Image (spheres, rainbow, N blue to C red):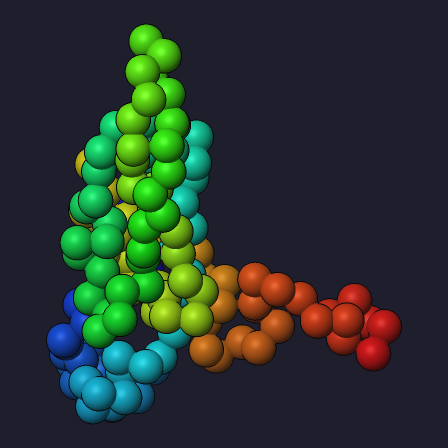
Length: 140
């Protein structure tokens, strides 16, 4: 999936119904909603609240998981004029994020978006995780 082009709709399982090669097994929507296909991360050098002290809550608004995978921490910052502001800086909860990509598609920062999704954390590959175990280094 190329999340910069589109996202996986949380309430949809049509791909599993129409795949002509059966490469995508048929699953019910409830099961599909629990499958991790990746993980979102915030590029703090591009994100409006992080990089520019500007208010933006688009990623959290569009996050479809019942308990939002994107949450905010209110922090006091100074803008370029030196004025104190309180902004909500987004954070990603890797336990809740399923990697659907809607946050990346809807992000108002483009080319590339300030929030991006990679395959890290996907359910199918236990070695493709954000935090590596000592076994990942061959040290048992």
